Length: 132
Ligand SMILES: [Zn+2]
Image (cartoon, rainbow, N blue to C red; front, side):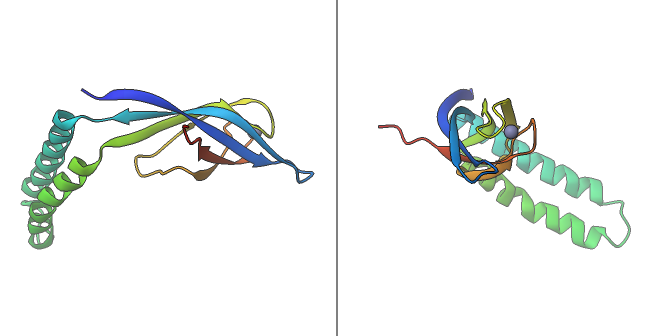
């Protein structure tokens, strides 16, 4: 079963007058155990091979798509198996406008990263806080 954990982050930004400001936030991370990773890998493999089967009726394109999806299946499965955790979102307050911000993260996003506050589109830098 996957578990969700949250870790502290620092949300940094620069005000219009040039002063650097920061605020505390939390990043929500979904972690996968071995069973989850196997399930996710199997799902990716099955979807890839299902797409290969679905490509069979496509005239001419099936010469490329069918072997492509067949080959991609195990590679996709391996890629999904190696993913141990996925960042979901960052919560906190924007250091520039002071309003609360919630940023959804993509599975490929890695901290630290630049994004925009959800309230006023201020550029913010999300930096993980090192735990002592
Ligand atoms: Zn803002």
